[in-house]
Amino acid sequence: MRSERSLAPYLLFMPTLIYLAVFLVYPLLKALFMVITPEEGTGYTLANIYAVLSDSTFWEALKNTILLAAVIIPLQVFLALMLALFVNTKFRGYMTIVYLITIPLALSDVSAALMSYNIFSPSGYINKILLNLNLIKHPIYFFGFNATTSEFWVIVITEVWRATPLVFIILLAGLQMIGREYFEAADVFGFTKFQKFIYITLPLLKPSLQSALLLRTLFAFQIFGVVWLLAGRDIPILAGETFYQQTELQQYHIAAVYGFVIALISILISWVYLTFLKSAKEV
Amino acid sequence: MDKEKIKSLLTFLIAGMISLWFLTPIIFITLSAFATSKDYYNPNYIIPRHYTFSHFYKLFFTLSAGHATLISLSVAALTILLSFLLGVPAGYALSRYKFKGKNTLKLTVLSTRMFPLMILAIPLLIIFMQIGISDTLWGIVLAHTTMVLPFVILITSSIFAGVDIAFEEAALIFGLSRSKAFFKITLPLALPGLAASAIFAFIMSWNEVFVASILTLQNRTLPAQILSTAMDSPDYYKFTAGFIMAVPALVFIFFARRYLVSLWGISLK
View 1 (cartoon, rainbow over the protein chains, first blue to last red):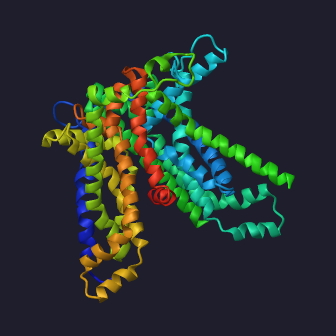
View 2 (cartoon, helix red, strand yellow; view 1 turned 90 degrees about the vertical axis):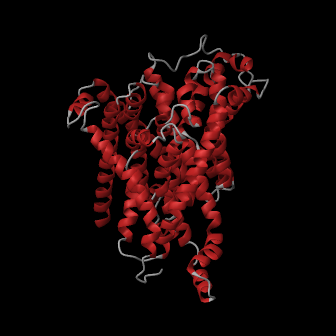
View 3 (spheres, chains in turn red, orange; view 1 turned 90 degrees about the horizontal axis):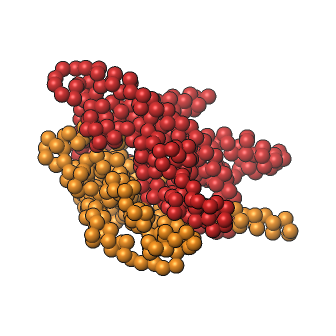
């Protein structure tokens, strides 16, 4: 590590800082400006914010986004923990399973949504299988504006399939960092497997669990592609409404308010998480 | 002995179920992407019996998927180029120098990830309209670079940290200049890791759909094109498109599998 007083590191960092100032900070400020100025005309106004807050679709979108997150995240964390614990027993050929589990990591939400549609659509695999087993006479319609409940659960399944691997890989990395000596000591004291899990694995896995939770929560509030493709606006969500206001209605300033709500929620989540983590470290 | 056997049989069964859960959707979409439409819509065939390339052919040459794929590939390539030009020096500075404000800079880079792309896309569209690059691939490249840059900096800094500084110092002793030492010694040693992070950046850009959809109308990337047209197209086009989107991901996992855990480990910190 070089520590001589030189300008080199600053010069090396300069292009990045300039770029982020132009393409991150400036657009953010512009978005803030859009929130507090009218679509047409001059001056400052709270009308955009008022328009969004008094729109029942906004509250529905907020509710759906939170509801999806509340169902999806616990499922993902639970399943990922089970998968990581299973893989971490390091049976023969476990790396193959790790590769298989991580395949969806690199898949886009668009791809995953279409894979899901392929399974649940009227001429999809589930319907074909059930028809061939004579369990149903007519295909089940999982999609459509009068099937929002089944749409909701198809979205949950798709997101669990697609994003559990992300949690899995964080937890697996966390598990692999736990030293064997803890378990050897536990053996000396005659701990059962369950006791080892509760008193050793879980506490030592806490940092990984926390960062997995933070990431998943941040991403969950930005959920877009899967919902947009599978349910459209049958199930309004925050990012979907941002998109709708921007591209269909071309209400750029209203869209900016929606975008800001997502950003504020993200900052709030990060802040809660960081203070939570900090206090946990001090203990 | 028997207990051992039962245990390994159980492990085998669970591993099999996990594989099925993760592979089935991919196998199914592959079958549907190549199935003839007659077989796909025939409720009596669960597994299609006749396969064809015609959906691919039509998507690519008659419909706009060819153009969109080309744009997606160009956007991803240019995003990698730009984000590496900007990010590799910054990552190198983080790994090799001690300097005042280093932690602040690192935190700044990290904190940019708190801002969702949704909030960036809207003002960027207006800015790009003002400077005349709306609906061009350059607009998407600039936005994607903002998204990818923090990852590139963090990943490359940890890759450079993994290259022993002693090699570089030895080169300096033998009279190479600092920049020559970097290009002749450190860079070649860091190359495999950098290649893996380039693929990572490629996937991020290739998959990104929200910003790309907002910034373009005519010159859409593949996911943006799929988002706006797929649900009004016949089913078999949906699955062919979904399959085309998935192929780079599958290739990526295959080639970057050795780096998988560490890459995501770094990017998720």
